[in-house]
Length: 156
Image 1 (cartoon, rainbow, N blue to C red):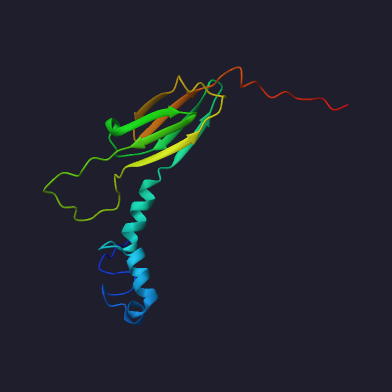
Image 2 (image 1 turned 120 degrees about the horizontal axis):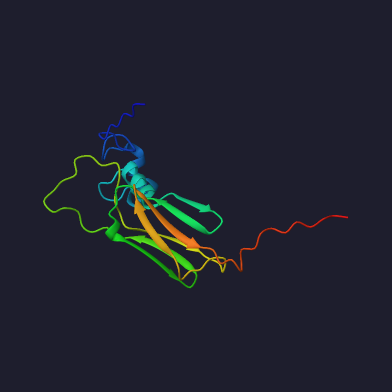
């Protein structure tokens, strides 16, 4: 599939030439709020979408695994912690390489944080994590006392 990107277009035609919309009070407020600085709406959307990292939560007999898709990020910048039964996964991006200019950009390695409410069904003091092939896997061992199998009730 071919995706054509034309970055010379702006959301309202030529930059700074939005006609009557640009001159109206609403148009001015809209541009101030939604088109901050030199960012186009596409850039703002792309940056916001990159802050939300997709997750899978998998359950097996012994544990739950939270898999966060975070390809291209450096493992040293991740922090995984548990506080008050909340699993916190965060990433802190350091400054870009100085004296460099990005010519074209479709992904952003911005800082982010995801939080997951835990229950007493897991041992929150035995959490482990592994980063491999762009996926951060956080393993939460199950508490066998709280994870009893389903009990079927016979109807008579």
